[in-house]
Image (cartoon, rainbow, N blue to C red; front, side):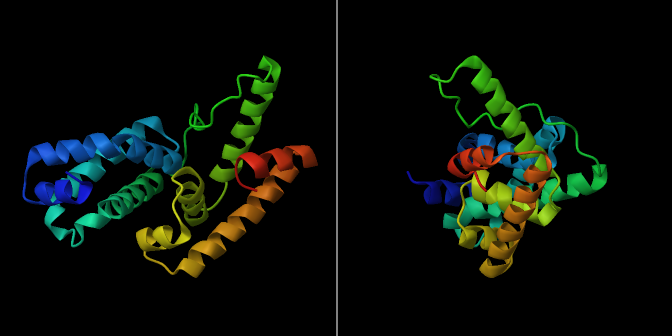
Length: 193
């Protein structure tokens, strides 16, 4: 059974189908909520609220094949709402878990790389909400600019513009943090600039 069929069953009220979708998307949903909110505790609440909203409003989903886009919209709006309530983000413990350390790297090099990742995330957190969200969708969720535009309900050109502005701000912020050219080259190769 493919995902569209599972979504249709969920729309018909079958809890097993909803449970299957929850199991499929819970980790991605949590990661997205965490990257936007910066708070582990809030992320749990955001994901729970998003899935409840998803189930309660399941009949409003017009295209079952677009379930992930719809879910990401719900999570994004919920996370923004939490951020507005809180106004202040908590420190992030480990946001770059997905990026694997190179086992051939010496331990001191691994520590340096982790510090670099932390500085990048600090710079990402300093972006405004819309730019930060676009960066998260593009680099962490690996969505296309078209998919991001659909989720955020804006033009693809707007997404590209926000992404371009965010890259420039990140580059400037990292430069202000004392990044050298070789560190920027590493970032271009491994992440974003």
